[in-house]
Image 1 (cartoon, rainbow, N blue to C red):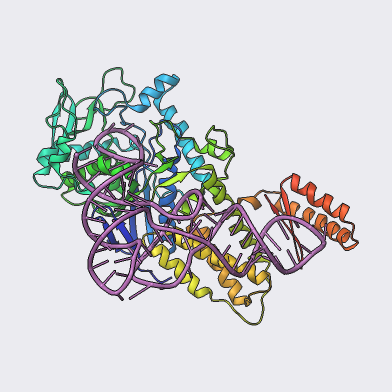
Image 2: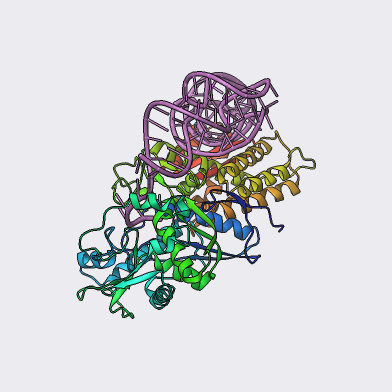
Length: 490
RNA sequence: GGUCGCGUGGCCGAGUGGCUAGGCAGAGGUCUGCAAAACCUUGUACAGCAGUUCGAAUCUGCUCGCGACCUCCA
């Protein structure tokens, strides 16, 4: 496998750059994972599915990728002030369980959804609670270096001090003065020195459910420090790719950069990648706006905004049809269009496996393969690649219709392309043909279609139509062609 | 208000200074006992105005509209 020249859009520089790993063939990639105090929401899924595609493509190119995606299971505060309960404690009180029961429940749910979307598990999935020591060590180092201060058991990052040496607003191209001007006034009893300062470690009230001992007393870590601590631990002080949703860039990632710089004196990340938001009827789907539906509701259609349920693979197909840096708008019409497109692609792949080779060739698959690579190499443009894959489907179907000719080598190449691009990289799978009894069903269907063809041969269309209509009612479509009949699950 | 992005044919959604994106839907055709599928053909597209250019949907400016971030969220 030759390494293809990959171009990545880097948020840090706001331009596309040639991808050159720090230590090829190794690639370190960190993606901000979910906060597991609630069901995963679909917007998160889009980010994780996008990075799954990115991970898959890097693997396909032959890179040895260490993909780290954290689970935030502590320290994420409810409000925008660095005070009050964290999300887990609040939810635990509400449900009258241990915070770690909350964590367990929603972590398992998250994994179920990720599996449904056919994402590959990350290489390491570290938790914040499992890395309290690393976080404390990092905070100590930041304090030692003079970029933080402690007030009554809470440690704050000193943004203004930091800004004297580093460009705090670099990731989102903002000036410090503008950031300060646009941040709310400090409250009267606020312990922070500066408006932009944020908590590294938060003092816990005695009744607080999740707290750990630290040099500053009992407390829990601030939200941003976990990613800095864990990415440093598993990927080093500087690593290749850091990803997450665009909404994280301004605050979470900006603070991550600051923490890592203040601790390690080096830029933590070479390429920052941000996925765009998922919208519903043009507005961002978000937890607070309440305009979202859960993955489960999407699959079953059990939500007022949804006309029907959509299979996970149809949804993944839909997401892959849009570039990861564009907003993606969910609507029933768009989802249904994607569903049909997905089915068409899967049907084409089935046809490919029944194709008969001919001695000569009228097709040029090499060019299509290269165009697929060109698309993916241009900042993971899965959308353009899929247009090429539909061209491949057209060729396959035309061959089946006798309008194109493919040799055995062509067929093998087409199968290889399908495996690489459709299954390995886009991460799609044909879930219609899944199931343990498939071999049995195949046998039964072969018999049924034989009987129907015999009826057709005798011009007994009453019987043949009855078979077709009845099968249709239970979700099996019969397709006739010159060479016989095939079937498909709807 | 600041930062950034977007506005493409009925819908979704790519894209490049001159060459077909693609999917869905629609129309016509081929095939078929019929249907479905498949294949072929096909339609008014690039928010508006002005400018740069031999040539712009693609570059520049302005106008209008939309969105994201700046506050927890991927």
